[in-house]
Length: 200
Image 1 (spheres, rainbow, N blue to C red):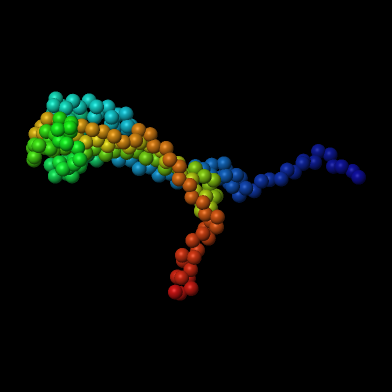
Image 2 (image 1 turned 180 degrees about the vertical axis):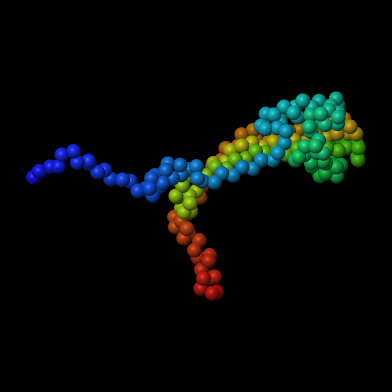
């Protein structure tokens, strides 16, 4: 059998659809939605918020000092203004702890009546990433969500215009994982819609 000289060798051409599919598979995880919940504040981390509150010195820091530090409900979002009634609900006078054992500043605030007011700070930054296989997630077979971030809360109490008490807490580091498995995938909840389909 004779062979044709210099005949070009034909190589199979991968269809465009296959190229697109391959590229999509390479970046599937990036296609999953990401959620972020942020309560806006001047502080971008737990440490920044903590530092702002720890700089408060009871019986020395004034309302004007708080204003300069952006701890003020009228200029900074997510800081609530507490009235004396709000404070009484948080620290009831009839509690199990004798009043003489309370912190001095808290005791003076509770005894000051309407002259006592306060600020409640509540900020957080939470991110939710869906990190499971793209197809398993999209078809509702398996969903994995990694939750990360931080939260911070604090209470600052004043008598007239002088801070008498401050307290903070929260979670400096949040790391959680939520997992959902549905063996039947998109058919898992088909029974819920069955009555509407059959006309019941």
